[in-house]
Length: 268
Length: 115
Image (cartoon, rainbow over all chains, first blue to last red; front, side, top):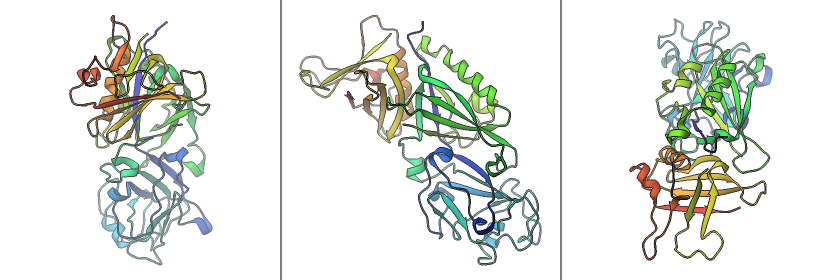
């Protein structure tokens, strides 16, 4: 029986993706919630702002080519994925375009982002197509205190592997919650549960966003850490993921091997 | 098994929470709770579905380093009895041996609270 414990550290970099909505909700994202994003961004009325201040960046991947879709200010930010200028006319989207939305025409209310359509704002608007995909992720270099900048509950935590309870795949397979990264690659999510830090019946959990078909490897990584030898050598904590500190680069063994692009946690 | 001892700002230990001792294997989670505080949550020593806590006050933005030092402390080889996170010798200021594990964390207060 081992009477000493291994500890594993996670730092949040929230990542969310979904398929566009339809009809009256066409210009709205699905709601960001504690369960799917960790700390939910504060309400914001569309106006001058930056990703750093808001703490998140928002990308629309075009699922269909459409004219009169993308505002000039969004086009001026170039393709988020390739860094290349959009083909002329820039208001017309091509399949796979990664448009980086701006804030003057985009607000947040109870976790739902709403962007003005191109017809009403030809500068910062974007006419969503029902085949488009939203990708919303925490901004590296954020100055948003609540989400990232000032340590607070559910931003960064260390868990005792003695109280690790198990892993579950999170649904990214159905269309509405499609798992996709800004470059169009498919991603999946795994929920890692621990006994609740408040000692109660509710578990703490971490949700990793990672490359597809890596669930079993996440399980293996957790088993490896549980039985690692840091506890014998009093070597401190294992860092599982810390993408904010690394500037978004994959540095830890787990980030590299599992293709981790996101992490958030919900702690009791 | 290590046991973690901390006293709470005074050498007197004649009231609840003046000093506490928790078993290291009861640690549930450590979390940065502000730029200068990190909280260690333990399963409640009284057997209820609750948590005991130790809050460490430290240098700004050293939360991860404090968690790392705590993990080292919880697992350290210690032949001299329990592990002291903060303590007093008679008529001396409170001292913080955890600072010996990382000179940058500059822990200045450790407060244990039983549920």
